Amino acid sequence: MPDGPNSMLTPADLAAIDRHVTHYRLWFAERDLRAVRSSDLRTFTQRRLQLGWRENDYVNPAFHPRTSIVPPGTGFWLAIATNDGTEIACVATRYFDDASLTGLFRTRRIWDQARAARERPAPVETDWAPIADEAVGRLATHGGLTVDRAWTGRGIGTRLVRLIRAMSLREWGQDWNFGSVADALFERSFQIRRYGYRRTFDSFTVKPDWGPRHDREYISLISRTEMIEEYAGDPLEVERMFDRAPKAL
Image 1: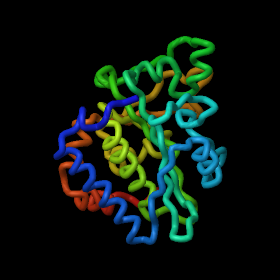
Image 2: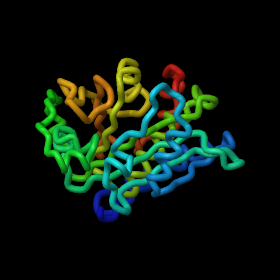
Image 3: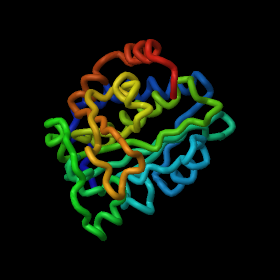
Image 4: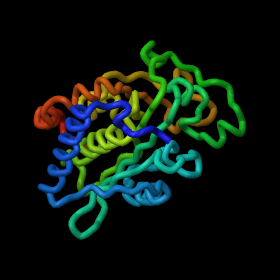
């Protein structure tokens, strides 16, 4: 279990994070929406599939109880709900203690922890930026984002990602946060322009015989220091950046 965030964050850091969390909660509230938190990832898999509308939709295996072991206190998910309780969007996050980014991907544990432990497959081929080797220690990731089709194009997904990442940092004080995207978002630099990641690179150079779902996937990465730099600023400045970006999730 991770230590409390006070071991990694200063009171000023925590206050800055809280300011951004409050900002996003108020943004949703102004639209008669609210964020609902749950630690039951089995429920997340059900809701994710219910809300999904893209062809061949699936649940990110890093958050699926069938493929990953998520100890208590190391994972949660958020739903965005209307006033009548209808959930119209969701995203999940989880925490890895004493881990390495390269280890999670090269061993394929991020895609199927159970199978990787059982079969001990050959390492995945990667050609990552050197900074990837620095991503060790307390790691967190988010994924499984989806927004009901009737609610897309309103900035809900973007703010939901921002909200859950801030909440996870408040809770875990992770050294690094990462996410994965496929071609559609990568080609628009969506993970950098909208989600605020500082860097992105290919998850693998040759698609493994099992593990990742897409022919190409990309890792996005941001450090705790970089997240704190963002939270030290005005949340409204982040909003202005969203307003200048093309409409999408």
